[in-house]
Image 1 (cartoon, rainbow, N blue to C red):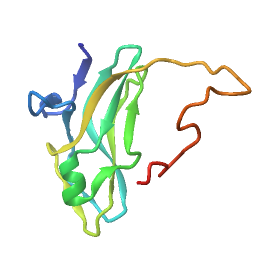
Image 2: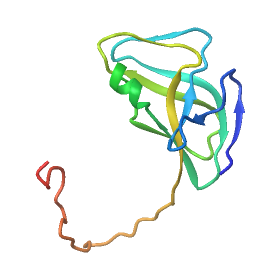
Image 3: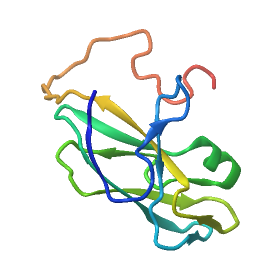
Image 4: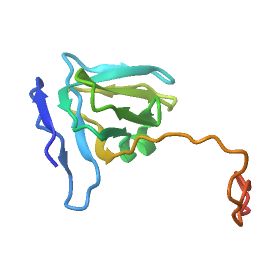
Length: 143
């Protein structure tokens, strides 16, 4: 699938780190390093502008290494870039650790995945089909 991109940074385009990678690594594009204090949130610019095909979204996900080693993750868990958005891709990060963390220009700050979606319509009903689980919610299997 081809996604048109404008790259106003001096970083390489997002790319897969390995043949089996699902996400493409995205780099920070900063004039100077950014310090993120504990529990602080910041948007990290990338210099990337995308033209996502209609019927698709780009999901922005945290990098597992940054999350587990440094407590740096995404503010909203997984971000969505809609197909009609044409602004700069910004990465909303939060520092969940007890220590400051520095992000420098060129650092890998997130990964992105292209995902197809369907628009849905709701049909109002009085009852739903029963299943073995039915309304068994969180922890219903014992975990």
